[in-house]
Length: 390
Image (cartoon, rainbow, N blue to C red; front, side, top):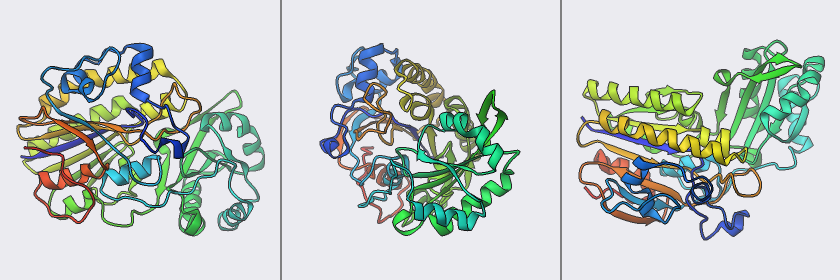
């Protein structure tokens, strides 16, 4: 039974796009710089054709790649995870989500206080989540005021200690912020509840209790189109959150790349046993969250090697006539100045029976959506052109 699996290596770009100057990213090259600095062992990715996409230090260009190989260009106005995944789903945005590098305007904070009932907020700045919780955790517990912060992404994050603001209250507050405050010109991609625990000696975020309240996509994404055509759809990792759950029969959250790999393998095995057409979409977040944003080149390289080692398990689990896509949603070059995402091409490897062709530089991430629709022979008005050459 046909299975189409897409694995997004979050933040694994492959070189600055021609419009990188508009984003301050000229010279960014996530994979290029990591390979140059660390020479990671990526035998399986090389076998599939990673080194054939473009020269990468230490990655040989396979004489006969086992996957179709190329790269995709982002055309939407942005370089965040929501924008990248929405374009992969066939939705191209001509307007970027708002970001707040200097914190949120006072009028927006006052609106948040009005709907939430809090007497004030702490922070209101762009910051690392772990750092701001360590810095303001004690004051938060003393005052009861939530910690509000953002990042380079279009996000409004609310952090609170579970003993100070119970989980249900934190979720309710974030839901109100999503529905009544972060709208119109302030319609950020995600409002994120960030519960934490611990004391002044060590505060720790509770990743499994994090909850994202995403903006609804403006049209049906590819997974909803497929589900309406009786294809079972499964989200692994943060994929479900990026679409507010839209279009998925099953959403499986994970806390790490290792969990994401295990959950994806389990989903493939279940799909193979079920004899039902299935679309599985996975995001492996550690590249971006743990290493890119923290300028950890060595950690990024180790994560790539760990993923590379898992590829044969995916190949063995997939039945004949299945498709395995490996790509990314944006760049996050840990060797580039700053900790922001980067406007980069993303690698594209497409493994199926008979693959091994150069599919060039695709003009949009939306070719992924068109390809999934093509695979299942489903008609769609979404953007993109199929890259399958079966």
